[in-house]
Amino acid sequence: TYFLLDREKNFDIIIPYLYIKILRRIINMDLIIRNALLRGAKETQDIAIKGGKIAKIKQNLKDKGKKEINADGKLVTESFCNAHLHLCKVYTLQMMDEEALKSYHGGDMGAAMTAIELAARVKDKYAVDWIIKNVRKALALAAINGNTHIRAFADVDSKAKLIGIEALLQAKSEFKDIVDVQVVAFPQDGVVREPGTEKLIDKAMKMGADVVGGIPWIEFTEEDEQAHIDAMMKLAVKYDKDISMLVDDAGDPGLRTLEKLAVATIKAKRPGRSLAHHARAMALYPGPYFKKIAALLKQAEMGVISDPHTGPLHAKVKELLAEKCLVALGQDDVVDAYYPFGQNSMLEVAFLNVHLLWMTTYQEMETIYDMVTINAGKAMNVKDFSIAEGHPAHMVVLDGKSVYEAIMYHKEPLYVVSHGKLIDKEAMKKFI
Image 1 (cartoon, rainbow, N blue to C red):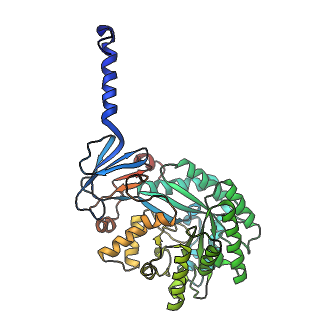
Image 2 (image 1 turned 90 degrees about the vertical axis):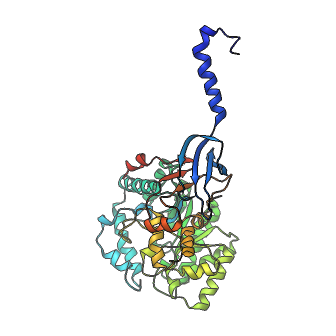
Image 3 (image 1 turned 45 degrees about the vertical axis):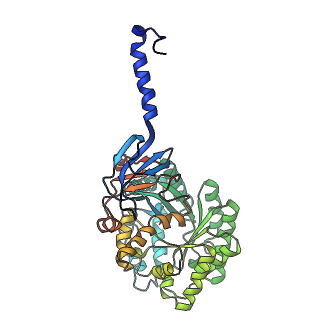
């Protein structure tokens, strides 16, 4: 083609053209992470990403990327998943007094319902304009800390109405392909005891909420607890959505809503579509009843999300793991009436729970790490959430060479990849 053209006339055109053609043949990947140390490996690998997915994992890849980063032998893992966060309430602690916090953190958690009623006062001031600012800050921190998937609860009741849902749906759109937000329509104050809430949850699902929420233990009678579960299950079936319910979140060994949710899931033939949160009363269950619960959880393929750092009681995490049940850790709260801290960092959550759960051996720390990555992703039904060829590229380059180092120092990752693209940390810092 070159010799058929007028050399003098077309020289300035043909050379750049040929250069671009050559580059296109050489640069065949969107992103390559060089010298990445994967969990359990002794030698580093190169990870090539194209079209949002992991294209190749191999030593000394000959491929070239539009962008390349050097992990320099640091640990590269799946990104983090936070399966439990009350996102509509982040940074509301300063709007409250400390009475709710005192009630929820009481030694036996006997005043947990009182805490919820006290915390509900903030909803009298609910407005999208201030909620969305808080949510953006929390999601920006999540992105910086490598937390790319969040199951986010928004209160839906006579006080909050659909304001929290509206704010979270807006944030979900704004952070698309940076942080995946699964919006939970959550009847915080109950369903039976809050007439009209069921219709509001229905409206929230029509607006685009991703998950049907629930908190059956807050109802006054066992009959009402069952009615709560049945009503939310009906909506989940209607919209073909998953369920996330806060169950037995108080210091009462007589609470049985975890069992009720598992049984309802089995009867509805929806294995893997329900998720239990907190289950703090489990800490007080006698051994034989716990065994029964573990069997039901496995039959329902239902995971448990525990947040030991936000309350003095917690689910029997180590015992559930021994029974081969699915368990993950959540952040739960960020600077609200239930918990005064939180940076939306699952490494920070892991660090805290190594101590709280006394999981301090190297192998136990690997398990803790699973509970904020692959276990949490599985609990949230995130598809193909692992580092493997053909899977979506959600990963972090950590500032350490082992899970032990990552948890010990719990620093923000050096790089975060979401949907195959590097997250722009500087852009995220504008929201903080």
